Image 1 (cartoon, rainbow, N blue to C red):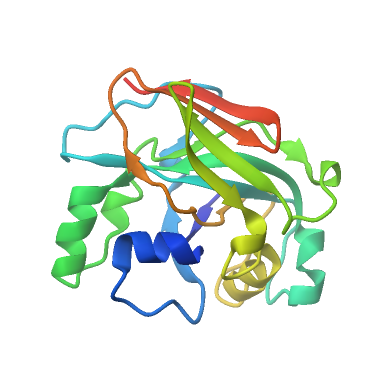
Image 2 (image 1 turned 90 degrees about the vertical axis):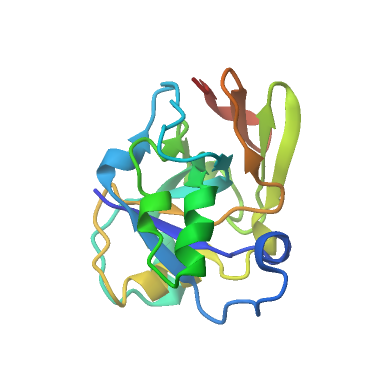
Length: 205
């Protein structure tokens, strides 16, 4: 199982972090190892190697078929379930790495940095590009996303990624975060929602 993630997939989030940079013309892809996976409501422990860890709530898609060089028009056949996930980012490390022109996998791929909630079947939703999702911290909504605002649709991302690496059953695709990222603190309570269904619920320790 591999975790594929997309950066810079919402216009307002791009402006939030890199206002002076042009919007991406192709999906920005990075990977997380399977050791990054955090599930079943287990707590996230803030690591000691950075000064700031940010939450980034995202729609997560579960791959259900083996595929390579998938056509965009057939991409919808390759996933079967959705949830909300958190792409935890060691923000201070990312800024250091970017300033030096270095790869920044370490700030994204550390242990437990890919939290996921419970999956809902795809058939619950009429259109994957018309889904609202949001993240609450301590009872207050901090991020709200609408998949119709993605720069690159889920199907386009799958077609793009599958040109380079084979998708396998059980792979997870983090599809990018909307505007509103911020740091987590010890004892924060994170709850993620797909429409009105709470699918993610855990604490920061």
